Length: 329
Image (cartoon, rainbow, N blue to C red):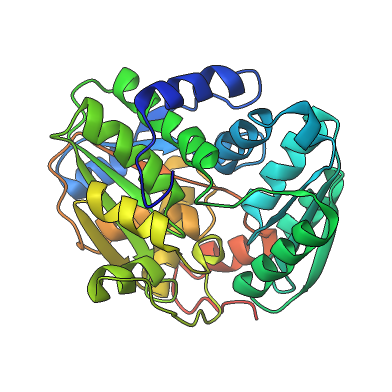
């Protein structure tokens, strides 16, 4: 995928077969409470139930399993806010190769522990995701290790697009999908499949006000640098790049923002009403419905992208009813 080229549905279908033994076909569950609030059927695509509790396992598995044995032998390296790092660690372990994962030193402890437990070498010296990516690329150049990009690797995008194939099988009359947006690989993969196979389906992206790199690029017409303060949606923190931006603006119908208190309320709502544990980045799609930022036509699928939230933060968020939640620094 160069210059924002969409993955072909055949590539996504091949990816689905390549990852099927590890990545789950996750449930698409109707949320009665959210459907009542929205006035239409709202379906939760529970990617938080993947082996690493995040959709990222799809893309990482496809990327690593697409490499030749010769390239794999050198090992793999990546930069991550946490979830992609876990997925790369899992995929590398399954392939029997060494993985090195660079994360910001402030990445959630839960995600750091998981990366290490899965056998990857964890590097935590970077201040931000962008710093971690720079360090990971330099490491790849110095060692010959294969760098697996978190969101713009073509095989990663194709892997994430497998979610769209499942959505069309599980809900043939799907009218809209709401997708959390970080760098853009997930919405690029899902949107490419839907706009090819079901072009009338609306693709709606959501970011937080603190993680608005793609939103800022849409406004400016090109990628811009956006600082990322501490946020509940740490999985969306970082930047986008030109390839992901160009793809996203072809397949995304609307890109919206939610605030930190709205994300906290969505985490609480999912826990209380649907018994779903979602991290902040996984809850932004629910947040935009609860806040009235979008009025879905339904049936609408909301991608709950991950559930890797520290227990203390979850307890604090749920216990305050989404109000007054302090973001860990």
